Every structure is written in structure tokens, then in C-alpha cells.
Amino acid sequence: GGALNTGRNTLMAAGTRDANLAFAGEGPPNVTNCELYNGSSWTATPNSMGTARDNLCGTGTQTSALAYGGRNPSNANVTNFEEWNGSSWTAGGALPQATHKAQGAGTQTAGLAFTGHDFGSPGTLNSTEEYDGSSWTASNNYPISVRQVCGAGTQTAAWGAGGNGPSVPSANSVTAQYDGTSWSTAPSLGTARYSSSSGGPNVAGIVVGGSAPALSNAT
Image 1 (cartoon, rainbow, N blue to C red):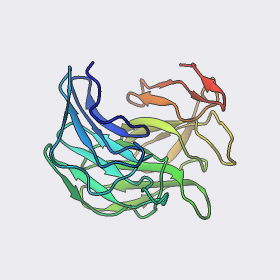
Image 2 (image 1 turned 90 degrees about the vertical axis):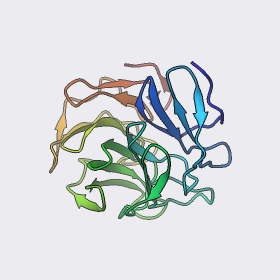
Image 3 (image 1 turned 135 degrees about the vertical axis):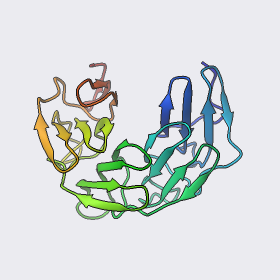
Image 4 (image 1 turned 180 degrees about the vertical axis):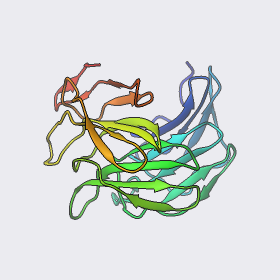
């Protein structure tokens, strides 16, 4: 497909193959750039994000997405939260916990954020937060404290797998499922690793690649 207009890493994306949204990331420096993909090429949007950041969470579609948390250009975690309506970003209710390298799931009116890392104590996190379209509420904790976990799903049927923690570096194979109230452990990954790519619902998920800490090609 067509190349992004702004090269970057640790960015976030939402949507489908033919209707995608790419936003934020590290250039360097961290950027607020937002681009739309139509199945063949990327177009920069006239309205950028309000907060430059990388290693953020995101979920949703090309016309209704969420961006939350991340690390700003000063290398500090942020609680900033923004909503995308298809043409512009609007600041929303802040995350209770400043974090980066967390995982997100769900939709713009039923979002989920779990695990991650802060720069103080306790470091790696096991927190879970739910978004109802206007504010965040703390929910029951993830089974372990971890960052760089992968996962996907909805607010009432999410899953997470692998990750870096509790001690760092420490690749793990823990897999967990969320039912909208609490997490339960599931069969472990075959290869312990973190920073993997993932997708799919909690009954048909996929985990690809990652670090263990050597680069992994496991699927």
C-alpha cells in the first residue's frame, strides 16, 4: 500500500484495512500527526492531536476512535485522553493513572485500558480502567503487573497475552480474559514474549511476533 506521509514508530491505529486511522508516535520527536487510509493511500488530516505522544493506547474505527495515555516529548507519562469524530480530535476525561505501554480495547463509548508502565512506583501496572463515553472508572486488576502486553476485544469480552514484567526485562506467557467485571487466566502462550502484535475477539485471537527478549517470529 501507499506509504505514510510521516515516518514514525510506536504509533497507534484504528479501523480496518480499507478504512484506517494512524495517529501519534515517535518521529523523533513525538508527533501529533493523524492520517487516514482508504485502501490504497494515506492522507494527512488538517486537524492534529492535541498532545504529542508515543507508546499510547488506542481503539475504535476510522470515524470514531480513542487515544489515551502515552509518553510525551519530555519522557513523562500522560493521562491525556482524546476522541476522534472522523474529522477532529477533542479532549475528554483524563485517565486516572498516567501510563504508557498499556493495552486498549473496545469502542469510543465503551473503552478499556489495562496494564502499562509508569515512571515511579510501582513501575509495571496491573490496573484496569473502563470508559463509558464521558469518564473513566477503575475496575478489577489484571492478573499480573505487566507492560507491553498485547490483546484486543470489547469492554465486556477482552483478552490480553504476554508482556514484559512483573520484573523487567521478563517475558511472560500469561493470557487472561475480561468479562466486563473481572479477569480470569486462560491457557498460556506457547512462547513467552512482549511487544507482540495482536488482533481478533477473545474467541478467535492471534498474537504475532514480539521480543523474548530476542526477536520472536512465533504466531
